[in-house]
Image (cartoon, rainbow, N blue to C red; front, top):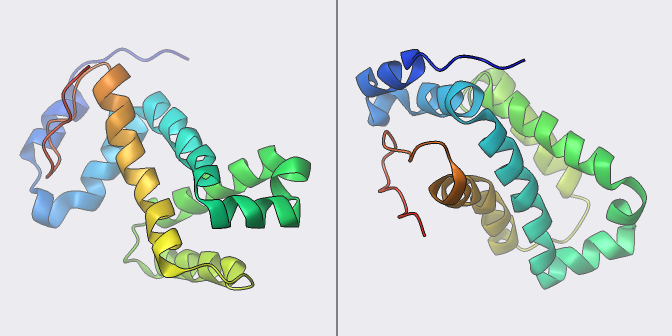
Length: 148
């Protein structure tokens, strides 16, 4: 279903304070302003985890990507949605983040690899949007990346 862009969400974003309304801003941007861009960038971010030698080795050893690549991608999207919908600071968001940590706790993954992987889901969205989004992100605390 195609939706008509009325500017309602863009105007709503302009009224929010990034310091206190960041969760609402991310929700509006992911669900209304850039839903397809967010989806594509999230999938690219997950694929970029193969660029981390230790993660690539672990994924290959467990066979998770070879056997269940679509399921793993869908599970990741579902978990991130469950964290972001109520907010990462909410009881449900914290519970889902704890669940995510428990799943990955079976493996010896260095913290810097966790941080890099999580940062991919943020910055790949910004990079994708800067290159291909229908408009630049202007209501975020960082400066939008210039279009190439």
